[in-house]
Each structure stands twice: as structure tokens, then as C-alpha cells.
Length: 131
Image (cartoon, rainbow, N blue to C red; front, side, top):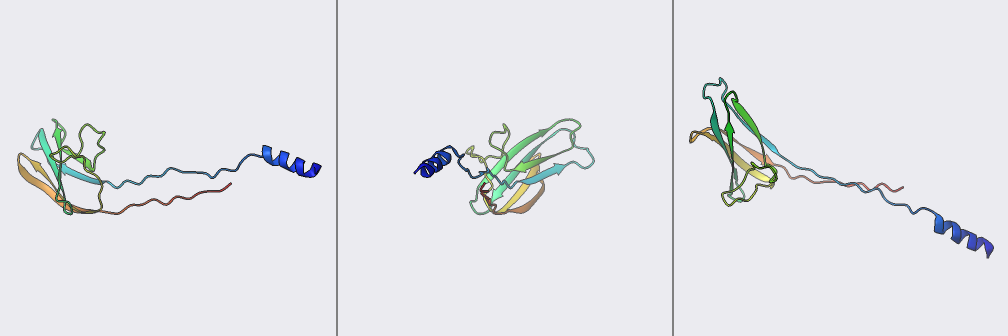
């Protein structure tokens, strides 16, 4: 009986084992860019338009390039916390929905560059490490 009580006492004071838990995130983004190769244009406004072929929605981002700045790269989608982010005319922020997209950049109302891309599906694997 004394041994049983001693075992209960020791087990009651033993530290409890906890599994290690990790937080994980994966975000896909596409870098789009435009460049006035010879710097002849001077300051200009670049309007990026990204079209989601699955939903039919268009997302816009307008960037002002100042004197001495000949080009710019932007990430799609942009974080909505960024004061300048890709958004639909309704104000809805773009998100990284898997699928096919087309894009273009307009300067002075004319399409100067464009292309297409496919957003991949992303996922996360979580490993729990037991102690």
C-alpha cells in the first residue's frame, strides 16, 4: 500500500508531456513589372490590371513613377493592409485563388506589356513532435 501511495505521489508531481505545435503559412504571389528601358518617358502612371479567368473579376493597381524611376515591380495579390493594393472596382482586395490569370500594364491609356500566369494550389503539412 505504501508503494502504491508513493507511485501516486510521484506521478502527480511528474511534468506533463506536451506535443510541440507549429504555426505554418504558405502564400503564393506573382511579381509583375514594367520598365521604360531607356528612360525616355520621364514620370508616368502605370496601371496594372489582373483578370481572373475563372471568376471574371478584374483587379487594378495604379503606381505613380517619379522622375528618375524608370520601372517598377509589384506583387499580386498585394496585402490588403498595404495602402496601395490590387482591388476590384468594388474595393474588394484580390486574393490568391488557384487558376489562370491574364494581366497587362497600361501607360497613358495604352497597353505596354502583359502576359498570363497560373496560380498554384498551395497547402501546408504539419508535423507534431512528441516529447
